[in-house]
Amino acid sequence: MPRGGHAFTFGGARYAFDPVSGALHRLSAPAYTAVRLVAARGWDGARAGRGGRDEQTAHRARLLQSLDELAQLQAAGALFTADPAPGVGPAAGASSGAGVARDPGAGRMLRALCLNVAHDCNMACDYCFSGDGAYGGGRALMSPDVAERAIDLLFDCAGGPACEVDFFGGEPLLNLEAVAAAVARGRQRARERGMRVAFTLTTNALLLRGEAARFVDAEMDNVVLSCDGRPVVHDGHRRRRAGGPTHAAVLENILGFAARRGARDHWVRGTYTRQNLDFDADALYLADRGLPHVSVEPIVAPRRTPLALRRAEMPAVRRTYARLAAAVIERRRAGRAFEFFHFRFDHDRGACLERRAAGCGGGRDYQAGDPPGRLWAGPQLVGRPGVELGDVRAGIAASPVRAAFCALGVAAKPACRQCWARYLCGGGCHAAAHLASGDLLTPDPVACAVQRARLEAALHVAADTHGSTTQRL
Image 1 (cartoon, rainbow, N blue to C red):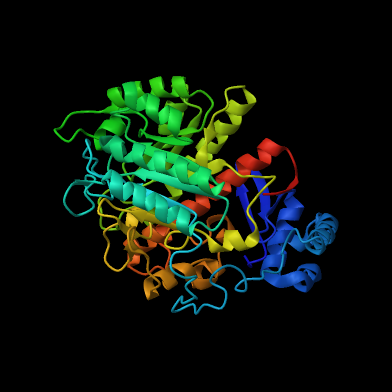
Image 2: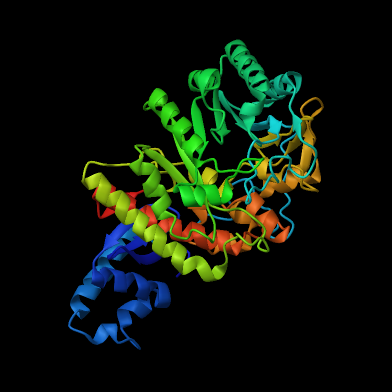
């Protein structure tokens, strides 16, 4: 398919998606054939009707009518839209080989910080990218002083009226003192600067009870609660440090917290591996517990890891997303709706093309701090050689490493420039690319295949939800 349109079938329906405008079209059979003909032969070839069996059938008149309708969509900028890339986004003008762009300066234009307040954990999950929470080093907790200095850096370098702070680990509830210090300093600085600050905390939920649960509910704008779904799946990977299952305690704490939290933002997030490719059952298990906001995401791990996904498993992954999409639609129609995180689209206020082309802000306007106060391009890159960016005390250094991250985006990645999903994923996860190949400009092909399968499912859900044959996403 050319860059101007992606035709696909899903759940018995036919679609064309325009990457640049974000328009999604539900198609009749002749229109679907017409889209594929234009993609393969161009407009003149599609109308000429040479060399193809489809044009010789009784549907020829309908096919020609569909071609006229497609031409109107193109004229309206809703299909086969000309792509301004590579002249958009921070990577504009960057070399596809070097990925070099101008460093915006010593840390200015920060949007968010992820604070790894605990390089320690009370679980020993066998797929954890942080190595039981220690990130390849010694176990450590961030001091309140370092947490406050990180908040000061964020506000001093903030490039807009709002900023975000994520508390991560390890298990951040092992260091509630540093979390509380960062929240207090963030609220103080926000008042002084007339800004908004939002806090998110990701927890395995083993400690989410009593005073800790009350604090998290009161102070966090969003909470991510880790549970892999069915007991056999969860306990197969997420064990206590001393051994023993965690599912029962985790689910009890999550259900209690969700009841307290009500409709305010919180998500239950699981991880799937090659051992549970039927992860739709895990998402539905969580929804059936009365948890309305669910996310189940693929493992991020080097390819040699036994639990990592392989190319051979992609058909099974696609079938699972198809079942999950059907379940989301069926339950919504039956009045039992739940939200699956990766099937969401903001139909009314989608990001501008430049923002979509820029993709992940890791290393650019989003950075991660470890317990000593060193800064990295993201939580999954903490401790990895070659991606350190500065220190919360000294600030963010202007460097070739920083410049390389500032250059990342669709325009800098040859594989992304040819992909129909480029403006929905923005070039993919930096950590997944680095883990797969060590090259930030080469996305992990398995992660890309998962992303495309997931996005087709999400587009199908969106089309059913909004009940329109043509819509912009």
